[in-house]
Structure formats: C-alpha cells, structure tokens
Length: 267
Image (tube, rainbow, N blue to C red; front, side):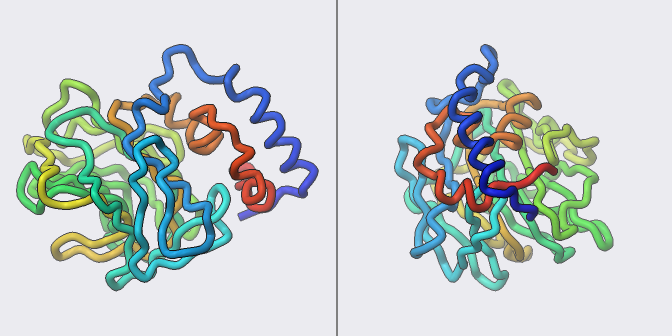
C-alpha cells in the first residue's frame, strides 16, 4: 500500500465529507436499506468485527488476526487452516433473491481461496464465492455445488483487488451472475444450467472459511458487504473508489483516525 502524506489524506477526507451526497447517483442502488451486513474491519483490535449496518450482525474471529494495512483502514488477515470470521445468527440471502457481495482481497498464494459463503453443500443450495485455480493464477468464482461461473483476471498477485459478485433480479441460474474485478465486468466462463436456490436454514455466513474439499483463504480481506439487490458496474466502482462508508453517504468522522493513517493510494 502507498500511503498519502497527512495533508493530502486530510484533504481527501474533508472533500469526501462535503461532496459525498452530491456524488451519489439518482439511480444508485447503494442504500443503507439494501445492506444485509457491512464489515469494515476497522477496529484493529479484539476478537470480533462490528456490522456497521442497522442489522447488528457482528462477526466473530476464529484465529484470524488484525492488520493495520488494509485497503481502507485496517483489515483482517486469514491465515489458512481453520481461520475465519463467522457472522453468528445470519444465514445470508435466500433462494434466488437478488444480491451483491463485495470485498477487498490481497494475497499471493495460488490456491482455492474461500472468501464468502453460506448455504449447505448441496447442488443449487450452496452459495460460495471463492477463487478458481488456473495454473499459477486464481480467478474470481461463484459456485452452487455442481454449477460454477468464473472470470479470468489473476487476483492472487500480492496486490489489493476489489471483488464483486452480483445476481440480478429474475435470475435463476449460476451462469447469470455478473463478476467484477477492480470495478470492471469480467469476461466469464462456465455455469452450465445449474440453478440458484440458496439454503438459509442450515449455515451462517462465514468469511475466509473453507467448504468441503477446498481450503481457507490465505491473505487479507477488507470492507465486506452483502446487499439484497443487484448493484451495477457504476455502483460497484463507486464502492471501490470511495469505500463503503463513502459510497453509502455515511459520515466518515467515525473512522477518520484510521482513514487518515491508512487510506489506499491511487490504484
């Protein structure tokens, strides 16, 4: 990460505070009412992370560690093994309802990183955002047990990458997902005619934990959010550029201390 001098960072935050409401698009679906959960990982201490949405779905650490060097503020470090963050009492978006999941990831291990998942490991019932291993690269992938859809941009190069997976309203198949890396829609492969009927009766949302024969993530994760609508490319780029609090029009004064010190430089 490249750090800005304090004066530049302060200018950035003040400009964001004044201008954020003016920059929210009239047709944007980025709205506090569409947020299922939002975990900024800005505490940088303790064994849990707060859901800063109105839903109070806090995450509990299992052997995860803090890192001061996040994409925005601090981040969580997932160390492999059984390291993860569990969102106790929240089982995700149900059935074939629309949804968008966003997160930042930084790692350099070419493995099947597990990023965000919920649902039981049964065809159509699983909802699993992970990496697709391709030689020495790994690509963004969504799967539902028996069906998968993936992009083609390497996100395991040791740099921060913004990842987003959107499922549009009216969709019913895994191949109808839209995958974005660093705010750009991916050229996508796979999918088959496997449905999406996500189970929310069995398993809570987890961040970084493996499912079945896959492996836990290894690397750093920051600014995770689940929305109950499809966000479009402009929405996703706004989240990537401004951070979740900036894009949602949340007063950034609550996180100024970490933002001034660690806000991500120009990508």
